[in-house]
Length: 116
Length: 113
Image (cartoon, rainbow over all chains, first blue to last red):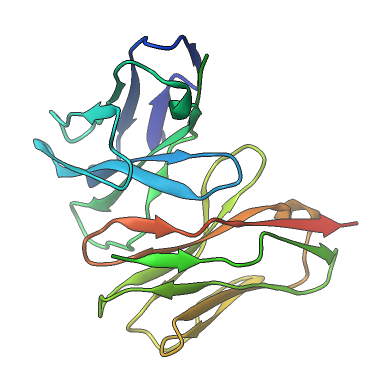
């Protein structure tokens, strides 16, 4: 019963490096999301996807890119990492293809990224 | 656009007592969901309770209940018989038809033994 799986759980990057946070879900959900959480703050939406091949920007998309080639996977790409991207990143999914849709998001365990 | 406001940054409660966490929201949607999520030190986001806006009855899940005042756009969480394991950060969140979940800044709840 895996749910939403994110990798890696921890990563340290140097300024200017690039990396991809992986996210996969096995619940056959249509919608997937990437959020970031800064210390003492709520979660802010980076990007989301309502289905394979469709992505859209959230509140804080600058410095990130996403793709959704399959229903299961929604990787988040950081290009030219900056200290401002130091944060905890959460992937989430919702909207099962089959009812019932309870409206909630199911979250991964988070990935802590530090940019030095 | 939706906004969610949690104005209390932290609260403390004695074990076995009752505590209420406040939340107000704003949305232009007619049909929306409201949630309370718990984030313990493990940082896992755990759903505590959900409320569908079209339902007048307040949601209840064991020791957790909400006071949903739709006209006032208020959605408070009551925790009864507080337990040490309730110590966590609690986030109020709103989700409209566009399916984007908007979070408040959260409140840190400490349960004292």
